[in-house]
Image (tube, rainbow, N blue to C red):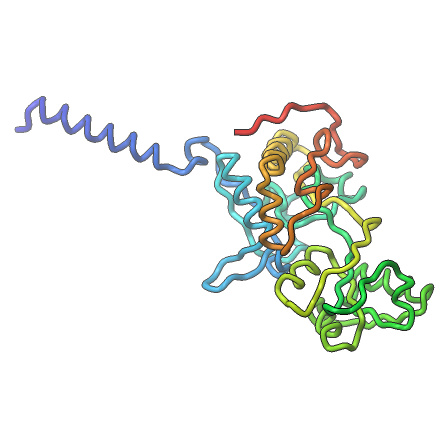
Length: 289
């Protein structure tokens, strides 16, 4: 029969093993909170895209995986169509949306947004060696390639009527870029992050004029009843701006360091996007670990 001393030794070993397992447990387990549930459009490179060997990768994946780690939470990211993300949030399937989401008045009336972590803007891409575009008037007599059914198509056609250039419409943005590389079009008009990503991957393609007047915030949406979680996420994103993490991720995925006025670096006042519904102007003191 084992002695009392043996039982005591076994109990000490068990306690030590338990303490070691707790120390090695994921931070979210120690926080007592479940994983954050979210989703992305898994076909929107370089924000989220399939990777070799399975799974998804991209700017959004890196950004919110790190944000969740700092919140001491695990994160589960679904790859789905963008059209299903907002209904999924409102139904309670998701805690927030990790896909890049443009903050508009209509959306902000129905969801709570963090402050923007990226600018989304219209930008031209041209073949390297071509003269840079300084304004719409430089495109007279030329052709601009765009992705079908996008705001870029609408704007290009409207400006083409004013300035005397044609708009070529393609099924995908890569097809529009190929039209530039082959010489069928002088420029393509698309989203700034997509244009910069393409330029970083193709030495014959260059990111050109950004239409800064089209800038809008990309923020993370939450349900209206998730004020505390929205604020916690924004605090973490602001800390990631402050220590340069978002700027580094931007350079990694979009191919160039963000400018000094980029939202990867700029911390805006209050919670949410200034001037939009749901914005809370209350000053805060940022505390980062």
